[in-house]
Image 1 (tube, rainbow, N blue to C red):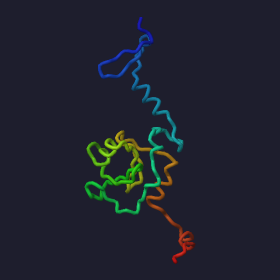
Image 2: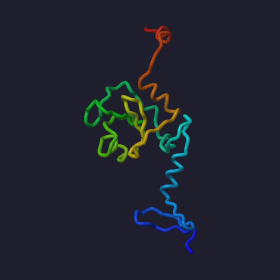
Image 3: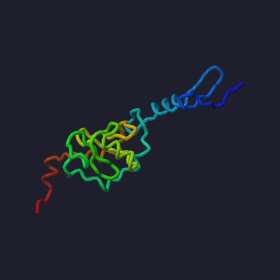
Image 4: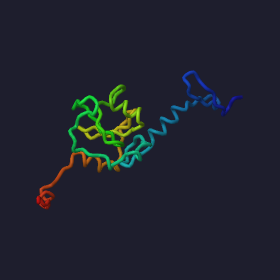
Length: 150
């Protein structure tokens, strides 16, 4: 019999016959992704692009507008090159940037959520908290008191 052999099916994926059970490759990958724990202890995706983030180019002091359309709503910062782009869906400036120059990590400048594009999933990772803090820093009165203004 064809036990343990892979064969192509109509949708381009592979399935493995094991007796009467057919296991699709996508289902296996999906179950693995569901069971990966991130550093916060929650379940989520383990993003392979975290090491592409370049903290040296990030500067959130600029006006928060898209560098292409000059719109100021739904703006994301590319965490690889530091440029600002609008949108996250297919055909938006951020989406096209991710495809054209292979930059995948973006942060929403309003709600501080980090996404991987073009796959469009949210990334939950404690190692990125320094970036979200620098986007909208909060200071205590005691911190301001110790600042020397000339």
